[in-house]
Image 1 (cartoon, rainbow, N blue to C red):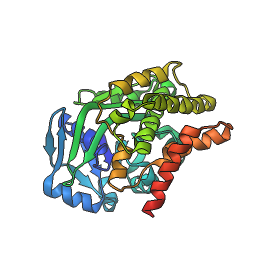
Image 2 (image 1 turned 120 degrees about the vertical axis):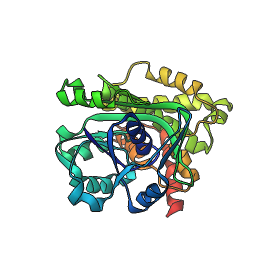
Image 3 (image 1 turned 60 degrees about the vertical axis):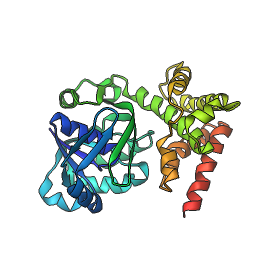
Image 4 (image 1 turned 90 degrees about the vertical axis):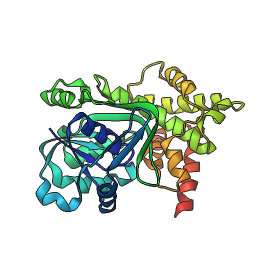
Length: 307
């Protein structure tokens, strides 16, 4: 199976690199500047789970006439690059190509299905905390490195079995899910809340959690977002907030959301894709969401200051 990874950043570079480490046939679609950097230094993963350095197979959009099409695409771009990434990918998508998105949230699914065909897109998400250092190396400091994927409605297909065979045995956990829709919404609830509080407070999780009223603030935001999702019909477990609070309590004091890390670097953020989309749903169902509104307003101020 020919695998194409969109980008070679903290998510695509890490999971694609681990598949290369396993022996899979992996190519990375990158920008010209990143291609030059990787050709000079290789793709370097510095990880608590084990380091790995290799010379990746690289293509750019200019290679569309010679690279051909791929069987599986790991779609790991940021949401604000979604439309550009779709156009970059189109020449490499064949009749049998399967697209596995690793973005946060849910708003990208109808876009991908409309552009590539509903049958080409399966469900997916990942849990990982990575960043690129100044040298362009991938740095991972926490142990979690999980990809969950599956057919919507848990359809039993030959292609999902083939994907499972190819992805199994890699160092990260590539887990085939029978409840991928639920997994996607559960992660969305968690990341929207944790990204929301860490960016609002401009702080790692520990000081927020330990401040007077901090843990209650986090729980209220979980519950507020949960209510919006349930009204929309999201398939959430009845005790998901309690489970997420337990996960949050076990997280390290130094844990920062990727959105906060991006803000600290002055980069673009996925505010509209994550919190903005939830506020739109709240408006559709006439739900008051003051905690979420405060989170989103903070993100809007940040984005306005970058213009």
